[in-house]
Image (cartoon, rainbow, N blue to C red):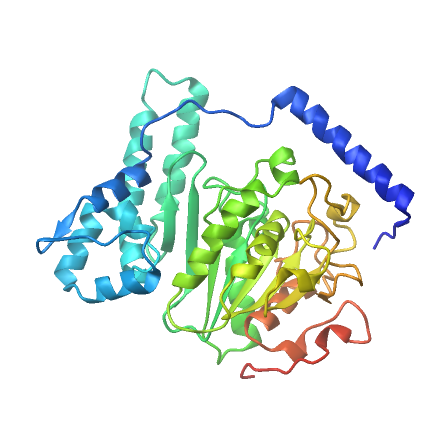
Length: 402
């Protein structure tokens, strides 16, 4: 791993350099990419229709109600009534924290079918450029992929670059639940990849799910590929600030609080995803047992204790990961704070041997994936520390069945 002079002069120089880069970006791109005002999005329209809907002569509950209240509402319905709500308000039900996960899967399949037909029509819309038609075709094929038999889509929003979350395993019966939180350039079209499969959320989650089952076959696990927030696009101003992370943290918190049962939850946060997890940490419920970051640009704090979480905080970084060269500081809202790998931060530092750069942490056969899997099943004493003294295992006990 590269070592750096940590003198105050060098830190000032880094801050000035970072600010200079940002000002150049601002001069050429502006603070934000403004979009034309539009009407209600499909999801907003579905939620609005729900808010005006009735069942059995009674108004439907506020879709923003606490998950437990919504869960009680759905439990009070007959199967026929539940199915009717799914058909009538697919996007609302498919994204409703508190709705039974099986209903969400069914609702999102209907919503995906509708979104697919919208894109199919756009492919032949003469008002679109050739590039626009090509984009419509890519989105249509992505929606078809997500509709494949057996896929469990927990959240779906087709608006803009889109949001989506997918489950591997049985959430209701899981002894342990893992959530993969990805970083920049994550959207509907990059949710899964054929090339560099394990650098995309679906590949990450599938790889982790398989590794957890290998690590502890008797532990029932579920893994969520969570791309249900608007991630920054590229390494611009959005990725240098916490704005997207703050929005994502609210959504991540809502997800965790709505998960069925009370099984422990582990968060695996890659790159900018670790900023999301850092911002979310203080509000996360106590069932979150672990926050593990890989290739992190920082967690918006100077020390792990400032996250104000009861979860164990883990960190790893490959020796060839370019993220180690970013300035680990925060100046006027720019940058994301201290390096989680530093001794003063206080995270449990894990081996990432074999990861080979910024995008390889979920590659099968790597120490990074093995460590994630051991954390995911609660086998804490089996993790491989970055240092031979095993200090990352201090005070831990294994809880998973071997």
